[in-house]
View (spheres, rainbow, N blue to C red):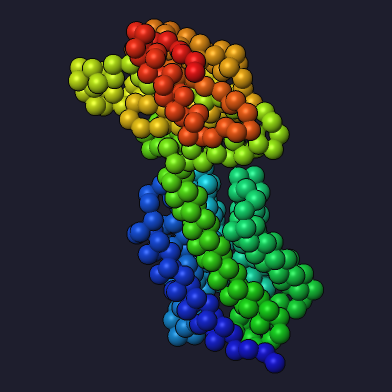
Length: 376
């Protein structure tokens, strides 16, 4: 049984409207760091206007129901692609696509008024959509990663490209039909595929934005916003995990408690913004001398904690010396630090005990004149 094309087009319009509303609300309430949502919201709006114009065919002039309707479908698809580029942090250059839009507009006008051939118009439209889909697919395969929302959009694009290829094949064999509203099995397939694609591309956009929001929230819950180091809670959890690993394999970590010397004087003389810049500089310099497995975290204020997995006292002391050296190269934001260091003593070891020893060693370094490392 063949479905009425107008009813299916109306369904596509309804889905476009719903998804546009969802994406517009997301754009309003999601953080500005999640880019591209605005373009993703605009795309279904353009598709909505296009489906309305297709639906009122024979009630409005051809330049609206054929030329503009097809053009808006193309523009909506390009806009969706631009939203994807923006979302993934890539430049959104419209120059090439503006030329494409101008060219397609001219061709649609010719195929509507000068060479009014339905099969040619549908074939041209199908090729244009396939080109845009291929561009988006290629881009997402290179920059999109492997998470489920991205894979969903890629699958939807791939399936719709297969439908477009089938449509080109039917056109080439003379089975294109005579009108979009012709109630045939092939038209039902093509319009149905379009309805599903509109819905699934919009759902894919929602899922990609939501997944990005979850990632950002997890990052905010784990990292210090100023220095981009682990926050206290996350770092202590890493320490606990490392001690559990040491219980199983018998090779434990070292811990360094690092405090910036005379930091109150730095804030008082240069202001809090200068103090923040010193903290950021310290974190960057320290990260550069740590191993890939080491973890740096902000323990509180100007005090930091360094976790050194599988490092004995000698190895940890060498790291401490590298930190002192990295902060004494003559940079305007260089600072002096006192370091208290302690190492794992065996299976009986607890995190509280290690932190207590590191804190005592830090106090010793301060008491002995600062800008030095003491080992407990």
